[in-house]
Length: 365
Image (cartoon, rainbow, N blue to C red; front, side):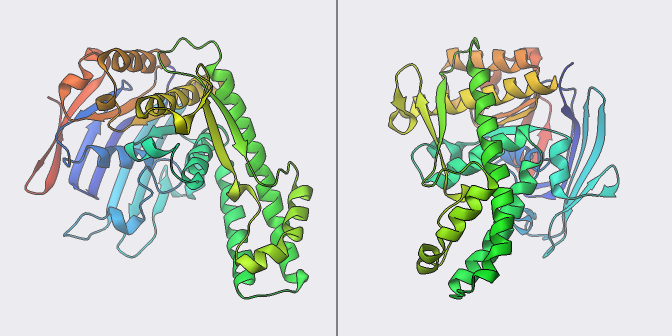
């Protein structure tokens, strides 16, 4: 079995789940039940096994189960070829999330080196038609899946930029105050730019020659100022100071870039495609991401697909399941009824999620 997978997942006071425990064998996981039962909450818990705020981008305080308002915990065992780790995530009311790996405290960014996770959630259906921020975040998630150190570069860049923006808002004009921050931004920003470019190249390569029912996309990065080195970015930041002072914020750098996509066979920008085509393009990118990761590391990543089955016809749904199984990926999928996962049959583990008296329950049917 050439996959890294969650072999057990236990939740305590996590959103709608007072207690939940799943024992898993590496097959895809089909979670079904009515809307609001707590299916996505389980998937969100899995997404927190990677750096960041998870697929909902929620703060630790937002995850606490109400009305008890006690601390929450996610405990997971991750298994795979040469891999065996215990991960514990906890948060007390009013406190940030704490990460432990094999019983020892660790920074969040360390999770990226243990398990690779890619995901697609309903809010991303508007990815091609809304603002650039969501596309940058989507691209950075892809990049992080290939380059675990990408998270550190993003955090370093954003920290230095916040300090620079504070100087700009305070109308500080002495260049000496800016140089060190701009040098830090330039070094981290160059790593971000290079990482994003490398990630798109790997995704594009994974699309070539792939036998898939989902359309290929031509991808690119658009930026007002194109820079490729730390020196060039530092110069662009210095030259932009007058404009930035007037705006009160930093106007050049990788935080202003955008990801573009074109439906290859039709030559149509993704934002001009139909809703169904846009969804198919997103699924195609997630599958390409997973294929590229398996080609590079030899193991498939975790794939989280929230409510994806409901938006596909039977042909494409069956094709999606076949591709996931061919990848040997532990894909977590949600849907309202078991019929949405009928084509998977015994190739997956099936769990029914129900809600009773304000509490979620999980059971194998």
